[in-house]
Length: 195
Picture 1 (cartoon, one colour):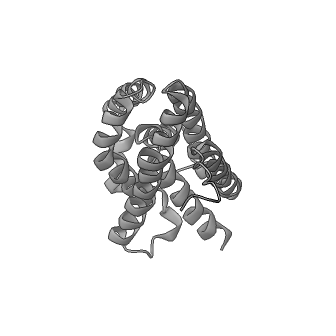
Picture 2 (picture 1 turned 30 degrees about the horizontal axis):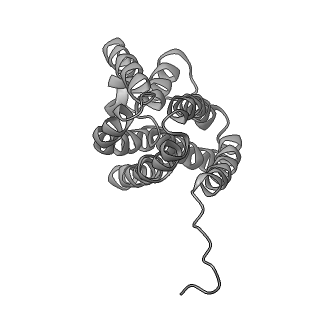
């Protein structure tokens, strides 16, 4: 039972992290599958262990990390990533749900697509615009760097310690909601005589 819960939590963690950065979690899964026994990919996903795939993921990851740190360029990147991040989440959910193989692969891919897509929309069209507007773009590289670090940590924890990852994700969501509320511009108060 613990293995099933760990598999589900890991699958959700990896697909959620793909909503922030498509390539870091894919690269983490590829490297862990290639060099450790922590994750074993089914035959249909063995290509992720190929040096070509690992190299392409590394290059694309670097391109996305750089683009995501430049104000205005990050918005173009987010539009492009609107298709890529949910697909990466679907792949990650399907590859990491090894202990829940009773689930139809199409259903697991849909779950990953929805999780990664939701995180991507929250990041790209809710959180980032507020951060960019409130910091005049200065906060963009800082927030992007924090996101990259968190994505890496969540991706590794999703495979190694999925329960700890779930706790971290809950705390992270709470912190992000708190930060967005704090950064949102306050509406001016109306004077009692005005209507």
